[in-house]
Image 1 (tube, rainbow, N blue to C red):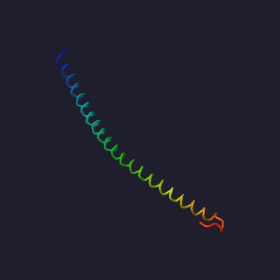
Image 2 (image 1 turned 180 degrees about the vertical axis):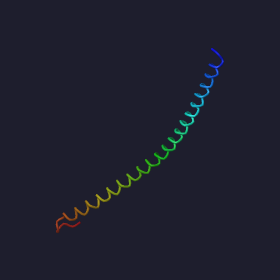
Image 3 (image 1 turned 90 degrees about the vertical axis):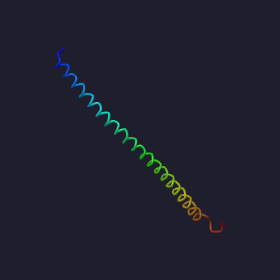
Image 4 (image 1 turned 60 degrees about the vertical axis):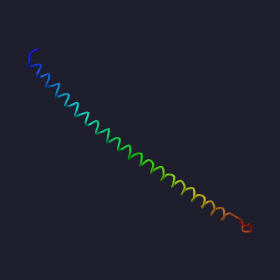
Length: 81
């Protein structure tokens, strides 16, 4: 092996390490962004759970009111409440 070949190989190796460092930096940034997105997702899921609970409560209350209205309409006139 001559000196030119070793010099070329050394430059190629340096270039590959620089590319690897760049890719690792991008990967690290993407992992950080993913972490932030999961934090936002966690907050959104909690909000959705709260909203679903509120809607279920509203539905149950409305159904109970409707059942009460329907029962009073179906009672015979001579029957007291």
